[in-house]
Length: 328
Image (cartoon, rainbow, N blue to C red):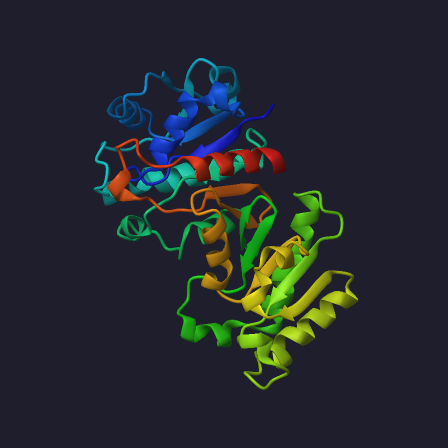
């Protein structure tokens, strides 16, 4: 089977540790074949630091599948990367960014069937001229066709709980102004399309949380529901999309309630992430919908304090690999 492409992520973080640890346990875990876009010498040094007895081999992308059983295949990105856990170095930015760009290109060309990205440290990348708000926006730009950048939709998933924040990394005070009719339409269309195409759910049921307490109580507690959300949902129903809401967020995530839906659209970051973090703190997966490629990522950051110690949980990275395998 065509391999998955994993990107190494921030060298000073736990991403490399998790990839190496999972590869060491690949047989007992029954992992799908994958290759790492990163820096072979650095990964060798980190494996030694972790006490992992694994072979690491720089290979061409087309040789990854046949190498996987005997050695971790690494598509080597040229650059200077030292093994300095917990101490990010902006000089490694070209390798981190190059790994992502080359992995996406390889998936687009058919050499790999999906990409799993380890966490990056944006501050280190910004110092080297990285121009994107984050990982996801960079991936969307790499997937542009005819200069049209697709709308990337962040979905958090664990088993049958799937949540999407309509607005993401903005101050809470700015959220109401960012909830627009068009963004609501576009986001739910992406969710419905990809749940069908990627997840095999023929007619997804999508629950939509209100922004205000009790979903606004017919405009008595804020008007975002009445003026924006309800009209958008009416349009989507006319298109044949099964949307429900706006629903009161304080009861929506009670398990018997959210299990009525294949996905829940929340209005802002914490409204979507608190439920996932509560039930699957170290096992949730970040899935980017809306792209022409499969992309998953562990739902955590670089965890510098754990890098190089071997103590970081690999559950979320493992779940990200398994989900990418399932939907690609």
